[in-house]
Image 1: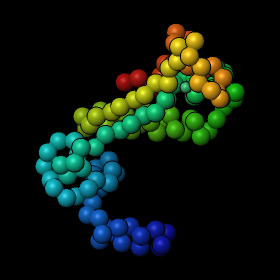
Image 2: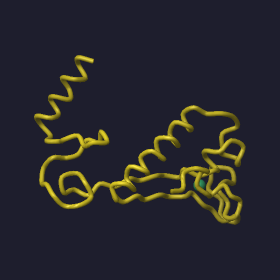
Image 3: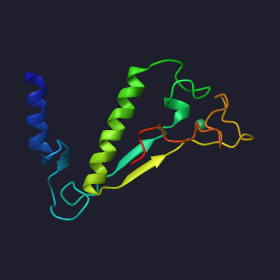
Length: 126
Ligand SMILES: [Zn+2]
């Protein structure tokens, strides 16, 4: 822990930041303005948290059994999304989606329109 603390202190001296009530580290320069981050706009980007990649058995690229790493990623994404919604900070989410006649080599068919694979993982919609 000692080296981590020293690194954090070093960073605080070099990069002015502050921690908010949710534990987010935000740039301290500037001030005021919306979007958090001391006037800087803060946003969340969620990339392809779709059934085809995260739901067991949902497709060719979906997990075949329980996967702790995916579950943790989904849970943290949901938590972050709720915090960002509460703060009215922007969220951008991509949903990997393909037409059946347009393959994405070298991958097998996945997230085909209308298959359900291209939809958000259940529980992630707010
Ligand atoms: Zn794809």
